[in-house]
Image (tube, rainbow, N blue to C red; front, side):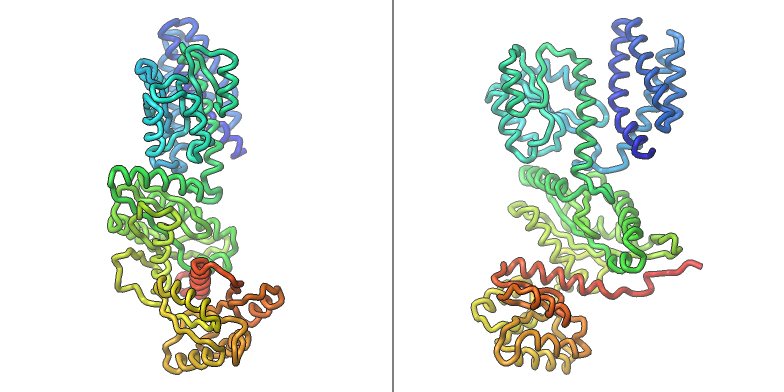
Length: 539
């Protein structure tokens, strides 16, 4: 029933638009307007209560039975009820531009047509963009989220059909609804436009009222589809696809306007323990509640999304790194004070998060900029969690100590350079026996390695033997160990994992990918222990 109620609610904007058209008709022809209004009221009267909206049925019934004198008053009452319901629904999730508005682009060199369509299509939940040329249209598409494009065939700098082809080849607009307009439209022209990717074709002069209703219905249908494609089903925040699109659009605008632009990656601390202790259903409940809280904590212009698991991305348009960090600190303070109730076990959990925040490098890709912030997040995790680090926090930039046991000089040189470039302090040994001695020496000095990389085949002592002996040392029972090998044999991988290896990397490998695996192992290993004070039994 909840799904049917949501479906009905999502289709109300089209009914509102139809009522507005009927209201316009009332001003031109009172009798026909009243008939139109009452037909719509009759339909709403029958469906409202059926889908759980008794107030719609009651208001529609009063409108249907209203006298000619009272009809406008009852009309306003019904419209208000419908708009209030739709407004609540619209605030339930955040769309791409963070403002909850749908973008419509009109591409036509006729100013009169643009003016009429702008007036007819305008609403509080829409932003109408006007372009008189194809080049202007592209500039607007680069800067704003567009949900529907209306293109005239004849443009000063290009043929509308050429623009249609370019838009269908562009990933940003490949799936956007496009309507074509033409003053003279034969079957051949219509067929060609449909073949090139147009969703519909309209002849001028337009029947504006019918066109507006058609646009509203199409936008609403597209919104439902877009929401499913661009929003994370668990938290209702944007997903990776939507975040990537938003980043591309906002970075292009920041590049032109020379405005600040920052990015943060957030990771819930010790979330693995929540899932392990209370189950994934409770973990999902925490993620949903956490998502609602951070949406309320940030500005509407900030763009939030779930990156995966317990990781979230926040884009901060027109915001410096320092400003973004201050915003994150306020949200972290709110999360620290909040208790997540784990029913039915009746346990309160107090959680925190760690975050890395950095200014956007406009020359870099989305992936490159996430990597910058992720390095800061990693340091925040490794230096105690429950904190937000930016590139200005130099005191936290501690070098992690890595032991590399690899007898291949070429591979060793490449791996060492990549690790040192990433900020790791590397000790290299060419045989297993020397590597094991170094581990024991560090243990005596209580100056331990944070990570060990072991080649399987080495002189004097192979990697498996080093692994087994390292795991017997009391200080190295949980130190992450990654095995390196040229042999992609399943039994060797199983053997290594059974004797305590955390990961297994097969040569040849991409050095940058190896660093990504190292970070993942370190972060996972660092999440295994959780302070018991975070969990409070309610009696």
